[in-house]
Length: 151
Picture 1 (spheres, helix red, strand yellow):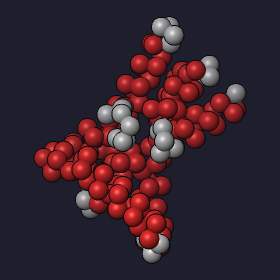
Picture 2 (cartoon, rainbow, N blue to C red; picture 1 turned 45 degrees about the vertical axis):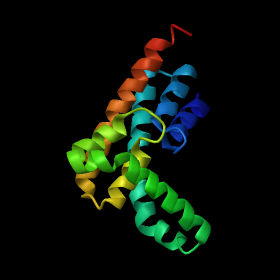
Picture 3 (tube, helix red, strand yellow; picture 1 turned 90 degrees about the horizontal axis):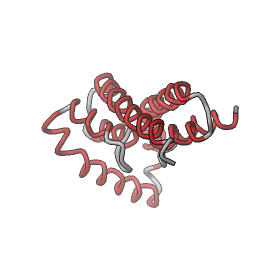
């Protein structure tokens, strides 16, 4: 059980899945469905402060290496392209909407990068990301939980 809880948390922290993968993993591992929702959501919310620390402190030092700089520019262009229109038009509500879409390329990692790139106020952006993550997690949890009977 501890292994399944740990993997649920790690998937929810991972940029390759976030809670979109952590929740289904936890549910398919026969963990308590409500516990899965809480730990996956909490882990996914923690990504925002970790990303802000990374972007403020670590990213600056890594930019001196060309391979990292090229990758960072590619990610930045992708994040700007995906979120720019929504953020300019709707502000923090647009950020929440962008983060809440449970599809690859959206989520708290992209929302954090957009916050950093567009120099948004961190407290408001954290709230917007948290709202978006929560809605996305509810959607994923409902589909995974109620869809288990179909499998």
